[in-house]
Image 1 (cartoon, rainbow, N blue to C red):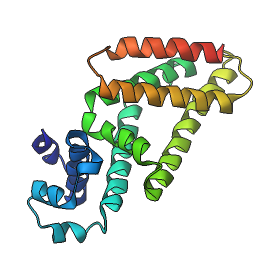
Image 2 (tube, rainbow, N blue to C red; image 1 turned 120 degrees about the horizontal axis):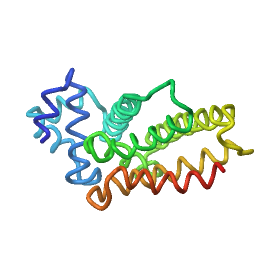
Image 3 (cartoon, one colour; image 1 turned 60 degrees about the vertical axis):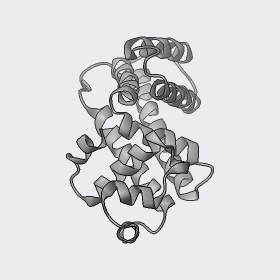
Image 4 (cartoon, helix red, strand yellow; image 1 turned 135 degrees about the vertical axis):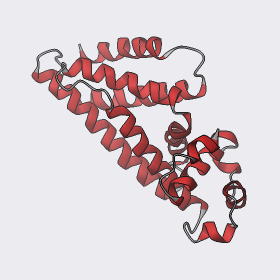
Length: 198
């Protein structure tokens, strides 16, 4: 599986990110060593240190790379002429689809959430990415308010709650993709979100 991803890598760093994410997915980040990554890449551990000074530095880079892949995935296919609520619902579904369809890159989100309290650099990245994600949700909600399709007072609070619900659902989707399809997961999550924005 990793070989298929590596064929698409644009450069050496992207290969490193893919191999690291794959190792996190298969063995867990705690059990991933520089030596095992170097072996997978067919290089020496010293060569890997030329790019990254530590396992944590590589983790931050791999998670940032995965987050960018996620942003690209989410932006595909959105109809900007649709209503804000319909675009938001599409956004929710794309988040869930990402965890099912692109397990290599979605593992970065889970790794980031897990290591945010252990690695200061991951915590900072986690905070930055969460702010971007919450801001995107707030934009959908504010546009929907402007279109008069929802009537909520505290957009900030609702956006943060929705972000937490979405992250939890994404993690469950990643861990147990066979339990429900994305349509059903989206429908159930949207039902909860609708109660928040009525």
